[in-house]
Image (cartoon, rainbow, N blue to C red; front, top):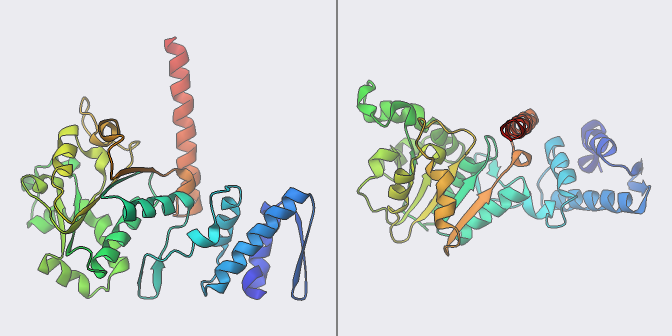
Length: 312
């Protein structure tokens, strides 16, 4: 009961704040009263919480809030989503935390090429990296290739000081950070030195065929149409590709069409390719990040409507 209700009844307070039903706790029993639909929802949430606890996974305030949020979706079983382990390291386990994240992870399992499109903080890159590490550990691939367009330097990395690694480090740092979360810290230099994990700017992919690899293209909104085609045609035998990006944060110079914006129109309907969209509801950073993303979306939508009315 302590695990279910939380330390100092923290989880119970979350439920009381977010549910319309009344919850009464006495001894080892929780009694739920109220409208039939409210009681059914509260009962379902409590059942999901108990199911998660029975797997040996603990609950947190964030987890309880996610279970409540999923209760309104008939297609979402919180206990199934929140207990799907991808990869574990140093006592931490990477799991999907929302229904769309689970759909994204499942799409990576089921398709050769997957596009994960959504705002910052939705786990696009992090989950792709987890699936890449999982595939490497299971010997489904022999290497991981991580790439990003170095758009701020116009792909002309020669002007930056230092070695190639020094030049590309600012662009691929988020990929390194995710890798360090999922692999023992002492192993990362060995993986990089041996070529088992390769990190390179997108420009260095030209002319290659990438076999037996898990390839992640991050920040794909900053590719041109030509670069996107070049990248996708690097796909070799036994490989899997995940492309991630946020079409609301394009840094390309004016007049250059984003390859991520155009690729869905080009590839829509092709077998073995999946497009997964994540939204502000899938943000898994600080809860304020989701509200910030939603506020910007609303602001931009209002501005677009005003401009449309003004143009009309």
